[in-house]
Amino acid sequence: MRKSVKTPVRGVDRVIDANFNRAKEGLRVCEDTARFIIDDKALTVGYKDVRHQLTDAVEVLDLKGIVRSRDVAGDVGRPTSSSESIRGNVADIFYANTQRVKESLRVLEEFAKLISPAFAERFKVLRYKVYGLEKKVLERL
Image: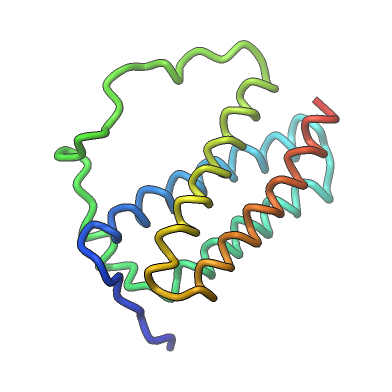
């Protein structure tokens, strides 16, 4: 059993929770685009691997504590409009989600620096993997 690492600063657990969830959701949309729209096994596996590596990276933290810190109703940044409901085509859906993933990985990388440089590096590596996958998918869409 792994020993859990506590986040060192108040609120960081909420940042990690929101961005971990956002990245996982976006990765699933990208993975399904590669799988069902492009029908490319290598790209599908690439996104699936990043998704699993992200989960592995975050599992060193106190996940129960992070989830307990979640405050959906009290989140001052909770979306109030439905601008996400407008997508013109599959490329728009993919592009919006790949941006979401990259931004979330960057936030995780920055806040992970409060825990350890090695922890932050894991998110940086994943972000660069997503850059490569994104280019290949956009070339196909």
